[in-house]
Image (tube, rainbow, N blue to C red; front, side):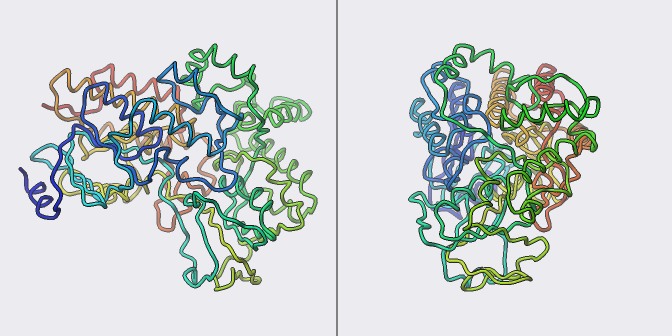
Length: 546
């Protein structure tokens, strides 16, 4: 037993248990990874902070929470039987359906036996003499594993702004990602919500229906497109299921990990204004992300991008009756699609309600939270309930909170002090036998997550199988491969307009976080080809050892 293991025994009273693999998180990624590792005959322990499965769809129960990818595509494909037996109630499913689906997956494949709920990983240390990972939890567990796999999600580390006076507030306050399961009765209440990102845009219409008065504190407006959500058409569902394998293939080779309408590959600037607006109008009526595929240069040419941005701004102006409010809601200082594009149900129409007030906190910032409400530089607003729709410490936050330490005692947080560095978004130098599902440097949040999750889990599983078959004990990214991949991720991002926005993609929402564009914009299909090529060349860019 090594010194690290000796220290762990001395520090903890519980007995040490050895596993082949430890997985952190029991959302779709963690559950599917557990399923695949079981197929290899490995012993696996999954640690999950929540009391149930579902990840994002366990935690995010706020009013209006729903998926922004089509339901028929936002699902796991590994079981053709499950594809056929599960049905969705709406085109864009609500949180309750998605959590129900997650529970169905867990029950159908008897996954709960290997999941320990209500448990957070507090430390994960690579022990060099034994070549194993030593994992500690907040419940006093300490276990070791040959493989350490993070499936904690890109958006799971909650960000609550440190507003002055928040501890003095005498009402109730909630973060949207920790909404009580029993709900919150807002009848007759004065409610304030801080944040108008994707979550806020989903929650605000629902909160406005319940509250007596709703104050929306907006720092930065977001572009939002209508979902045009409706009950699932049985004929559409039947047709989709009959050709599921074809649809899945199309999604896997697509840029965004989802099958979309194929538009002609033309520039937005090469057609007349009348034709361009006709295309945009058709996309608007189709709903959701269709507009992004309208022309080929919307993410690379600022002039082309502005044609789409102005189309959406005009939609906002036509919807919101108060033109001063409409202009505050219409983004003008960053290109459309460079922040996470939002998908809504009657979001802009909500500002026509008499009980909704938009408060511009970019011009007049929030100064403090008082016992009775919110004070900005322009005035005070009395509220009974505060809702923070302020998002997450994205992508790196969930990993840092695990206290991961690699070779030589170097922590992941120290290594990534200037921003995340990975090879393929799966591995990072100095952390052998550690895999990240949808980590920084992979398509992840820029894609349909279930498509990217399955691709990563399958690749990781095939890698472990390869190691077993070749009697290899360790895999670690090489420094030159990591450097080249980081350069490639940056080069591809620099070809787009993404960096022109202060988004959570670059960590702009977290004070002090390095400004580095984290996801890979090269597309799901191209990324899959690269991963497959690496594996086919006996894991080019990795050091394998016995």
